[in-house]
Image (cartoon, rainbow, N blue to C red; front, side, top):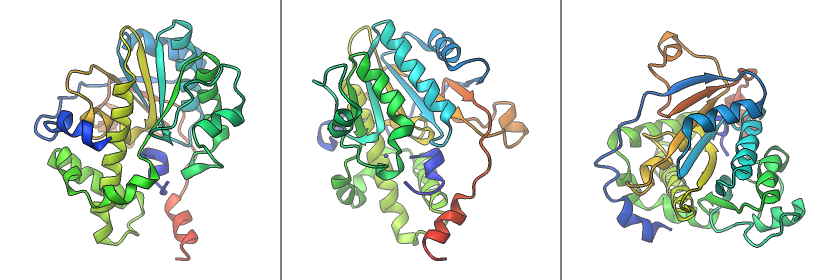
Length: 294
């Protein structure tokens, strides 16, 4: 994880290339999002969101990684969908594609689950203690948990794969590059921006492939990732098969930055923008500079 991307962004090329070929030419027109503010307990909030968004084969739920209210909402979504027997799988940015809990018993220990997901320590900035309640809620319900992120072993190949640049519309590609540059506090050398952006695109592609493969008729796949990964005009939705219906929730733990955003005019592209209480300001760039001795 890098510094600001720890808050806003976060992480099968062959088979999906044919399906994704048209994505850069015809991005879907995003709807105007509904804005919901966090009031009451997470169970009530999850119930209200599901009433608003179901039925859908795929529900993408974004988060700010440092906002515990967001993980509490995710746990409730898992539990309520599972209680309705509507949850076919939980897909996570926090674990690599190819890892899964399929075959584990519902009473599996946390150690067994972590081994299955290859979740060691605070891998890539994902503390197990933060996500364990979400993951274990699915395991206890007998629902498979699937890693969706690009495997670390595939990152070097992604960095040099210029074909990934063509999977995004020009404006979205530039936004991704700006996000990478700002997410690394303007400390990355310019020649590294494009390769690092390709990793971000490949991560979205990997999550899209994992989620699409888990679709089951009459049920819902829940994908949990950083907000930048779930936005309709920027992340995973651009890499889904064009006929796969989906709904998007972006969860924010920051105040509206200006009157336009407060009025919903510059909100992230989603079906629902869910606001929780703002987190205390944190200077991630200062932390990064200190860690680099600058």
